[in-house]
Image 1: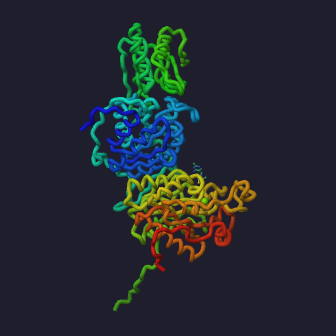
Image 2: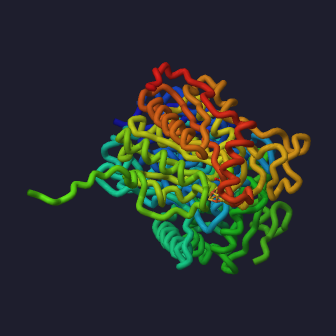
Image 3: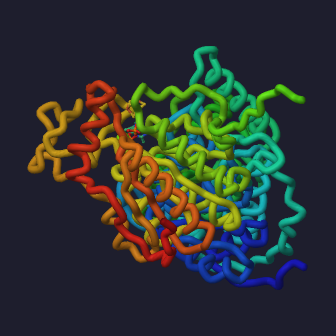
Length: 364
Length: 257
Ligand SMILES: Cc1ncc(C[n+]2csc(CCOP(=O)(O)OP(=O)(O)O)c2C)c(N)n1
Ligand code: SF4
Ligand SMILES: [Mg+2]
């Protein structure tokens, strides 16, 4: 049975959703602004027969995830930006070894220690692999609330379906704001698809190893990379997710994701009273980026305004999607300050007028 | 009356070893350590229940030689990976096999904390006082005065610090129940090593806690010594910095003579 409507902060929401999605192994290291997630699971996991370990570092935690994953379990870690940087080597290994797991990043301001305010400055890191090697991880970007629940479930399903790490990309605001949510019923672990590749000891079969190092002089690594690429191509074809709102009659399309999209949506609603019709295009999968959908939309609407909680990362994917089909404007707010809908409305007014007061026109 | 002679098999390849030639150099300790681990698993009936984690180091390809399930770990992270495996399969047998750079330098934090948590894991620690795989750079275990490609004038305490005795450091951790140091360079020590490995495995089977067996291991190639000299160097020099014998035992096992 689904749960009652509950009021929970975003971090706790992801924790409960993970448990209901069949995750019984969580490993993580504290970092603000996502501590509510490990704190929640430290109490919750024992109630469902699961395991919570506070690792000695993010490096240790991601490698515990690697071990739990290779053993066949649904497993998760979470952190915020500096900690996610430390997990990158492990994520690269898991991509090479084709191991599923969910990694949550509640982004904060950088570079370096930065600060604990929300940010979206890890877009490049999240969508371009993040560590060394030719690999990708699907990235799902909820806009908070119920979507945190739904996309946590989807993240586990995608990870298992493609045997690949999947990132859930939120930010510090989303992690701490309380919103009403409803949880689906618990997945029965027996209903999860069998992982016949997992390591459980070799009784009744040949011994087997799972590894990412591929030596050999006959192009073995070359072929492995081509195989991985085929998988990434399939993900790109089949797993694009986005939402479009208010696009009918729009003279302007606003592209934003996550918290930035929530702020932009308020600004769009405020502008309607002034007779400015702006639509919202909200990528939900950041990789694969919903490129064809945005391309089609930009054929009809000649202006695209990109708003990000960083100084311009997703805008590069927008440029790749839109090209010269429409004018592209960008406004970004770097980590450390949370912009208001009024500030975004100023950017959108300026874009409509083309007066260049807020934001800038991108050269394409 | 039959004239056939009956043969009795007295020696063979353990089932826990695959029939593959190894890439280890002549005189290297890794091959001996592999054989000991495999014999112990066979004799204790553990092969089919084992999941092993090799290091990044000369033994990175151990899964080509060991005949049981294995999972690669990034350099130094074997005990974190093993922790994840063991927590999912508490009823399986989990071991790591790690070099001194892997276990005592880059992976020192993972080692200490897995040990201190008392993870039910058996760690086989190959101390050859050098980075073998990468070509003879200084290890945290390199002896004072010993030459390495990154310590061409020999290890200097003021410059590089003292060689680290991680086994003794681990012994003070609450979760650790058994630590012993043996060498792979005399028959007597090899037999002791086998006994120690078995005891470490038993600790895990009896759910007692973390255990580790350190094996002083020759690396003739990167010590730039003939095999005989390298083995002698273990027996005469290495043991001065790393004395052989029991370091910790809270198992309560009565050692059978
Ligand atoms: C993150 C990372 N850093 C460095 C290396 C390079 N590297 C591979 S093995 C090794 C040292 C191995 O030495 P040790 O653990 O003592 O094992 P041995 O080869 O002596 O058995 C190093 C530095 C690596 N693979 N990954
Ligand atoms: S380099 Fe040293 S440790 Fe590596 S295989 Fe050769 S002898 Fe053994
Ligand atoms: Mg070494």
